[in-house]
Image (cartoon, rainbow, N blue to C red; front, top):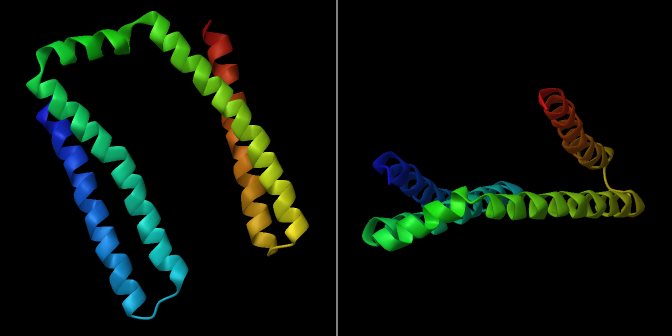
Length: 140
């Protein structure tokens, strides 16, 4: 495993700790809750991204059999097909759930900007899908 990768995920973990401390400080200074919540959310993202990867890198560094098995799993065509299929099902479910959340937001009548941001995000996701569908269909 590359040491550069180890440092990247360790830096993300340090970023999370810093964001957690910053959120406590921000709340103590009297700033609004959303600012502190944003720091905690960003820090949570960093933890979810870094901690499992650090454990995997550590296990691969100390156990050559695990490293060999992991490399086979990552390059096996059957596993790749299963991952792609699961991702496609997740995307389909996300579209339905995202649409339902948009409908609920419209019914509870929040600020217009919240509804517009949600709608723009929904359309952007499907715009990216259409772009790559067109791109990959031209390549094949």
